Length: 392
Image 1 (tube, rainbow, N blue to C red):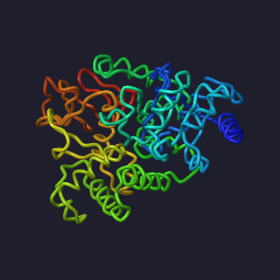
Image 2: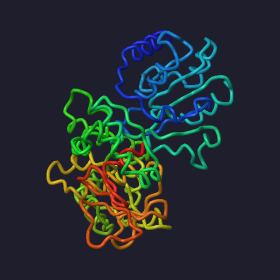
Image 3: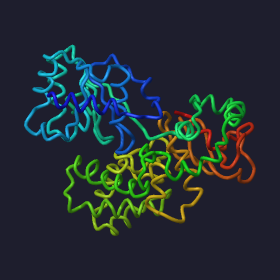
């Protein structure tokens, strides 16, 4: 265990995060069992280490970070390790990559039941169903989702300025004043294209080729978060990769399930299951009309964030696809998003109608809000598209 303490100390001391994630203040850290879910590449490991750095000195053995990728845990159970850690005065156990351990959920339940003064905070794939009615963790774990950077967070990193986030209602009512305050210190339109290309995933800060790193991350999502966790045979991985590529070249668009089943040589039912897996892994978003949901066919499929459009298409990324993908991605964190009617692309919280584009097409409708690209400040129901990147 001493080597794990040393690893913990080294990682915390050498942690250099230029941005404090907003989720840090949204979590109730008094809960005994906390799960941090998120897609691969959004910074879950750094988030755990940031918590340790804020709450404990690096050498304090009351808090310990462990990664279950460590070969040590091929022979050491979570419950035995937690017992030993607890006996030595441990108070907070931070567990990374929990899904790599077999029967991890039952092990965490054992720790929860037998070590009442030990807090466990763990990270896992976005695919994990922690609140599923069949999960042994139900009514014990409190889970949160860590997302990639919002446009607001990206701006903070690029400019060194700090900006508050706003609720959707605040943006809808006061967007003119909010936008004027922001553009007084920064020009958002100078950064929005960079955000579309590489701003969602924190690893853009690393001195590596971002596009290659993102492709590697996407393949890991398919291999681990989709195939491994859902127990899909590796021989079917090529079908998943082809499906994702076909969806990306048409996104946003209405999927032809029958044609997709022919293209990847599988059944319609399997295609629908694959779509659900891709959504859970945060690779795609499925847009449904109000009162419809999976397993029905979605009206449209989007890639989960604009960066993925560039990674899969490389060139010829349509601006309108970027606009819609960005809007959907930023809004659906805290709000329900459905497909709208006629000229309305999105229906938010079943009451707000939004069109997204470069300009208002035709005569404006009184009930419609317009998220417009390329403007710094809006007026009335015309709101700058970039401002929806300040929702978190």
